[in-house]
Image (cartoon, rainbow over all chains, first blue to last red; front, side, top):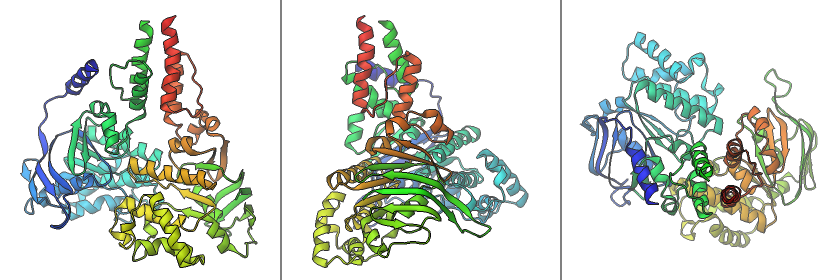
Length: 296
Length: 289
């Protein structure tokens, strides 16, 4: 087990370039009212530029509250949130919202335009962007999410996945530094989910974004660089997916699941097959078994 | 109650330029007491099929029988209400249908409509609350003050309070966290077994279908694409991928295992623990040779 832990630390640290901090939560606490329980309790964490962080936790663990605090839909009673060097407060909120793009769960609740291009234009109109620039950005961002052929399409003719891609394009059009997906794939079918995650991975690379995905989908979590686990309003753990998923028992204890390969690795150990490296996907586990197998 | 579809087609806005065939010549039989999973991507006809099960719509062509109740284009049972009291439908996001002032009133609404007396309803509520994981202290609260997960449970309790013989579930765990999903599915499964219900589950989760269903029905473009036991249907990867469906993760793994090791482990709905033991036997045996 010691070997396994050492290898995980190595892979978690290896290859990570030095990047600038983009988001800081410093001892943040939040509750909805004075007679209400604390939803977030003394939370501190940082997110870098261009980093992909997944936030997981059971319902009511405080995940979505973090998202709402990030773009000033809510303000904390205690502690401080800093985005791009600026503290988030009533004065800075309009600047900060330009940097923070959010996509929510329900594809039908966030479509405001009567056509796809109107929807993408909406956020830009609010920010007084000139028409020519708007047209250019509509093209650019609909192409980025693969929806360039649907400019004139009405929302009810789109699938859930397509609507969410338009929502992403609308957010990208204001050139944010961080994109937050708050369970944005939860209401989609498996092919819609795949479509969104491919789109998101693509635009993150293309546009050098930080990405925060709040999700229950374990296959989304393993794609992130780092996972923040929330439990009852507190930061329960923070590490690379591989390290987080090696704490299976504890994760189950706080109502979370672990991916199929991690469960299988666990059961294989129980059956007497040693696994030295926590696998994140089928290929890694098979590779490990193959090495073990061919040595004999 | 058993369910039979005989050459059922359903056409929306029939006779108009917008006519659209949502179900196309579907036939199948579900014996009493079976747990059936219906799978298909968005737009495959799943929801339209469900609406036939309690007579919300009647087939444009063909015939649907649920127990002794028969539905055709020009015939509906005189006692449609009785049918509806026996077929409980949990629609998608059922918490959107909550409307009463208190949790107790919301749960009671269904059985009251079917003429169950107050005392009997209260007795049912007492039984159902622990089963769906709700505390009695919530009964006098407004359903709208509850968390999303609790609201879902209240809505489900409302359906169960009608004591249906057929339980129809349209993606009942969508949007819940993993623990909530598991709790709700286990609850339905226990009820299915204890009360000998006939259960129809519409799901996108191949994992749930493998775990709970005796029989799987796959729809595509309004037609029946495949039907059979989960271990038969889910091993036909190519056929499933053709209609953009995934095979369960364990089947994907078994395929890759065979590619890599040249050894086949058959899929028989084994648990992950059982799979690990099978792999150990294969690999371990090799080791001692």
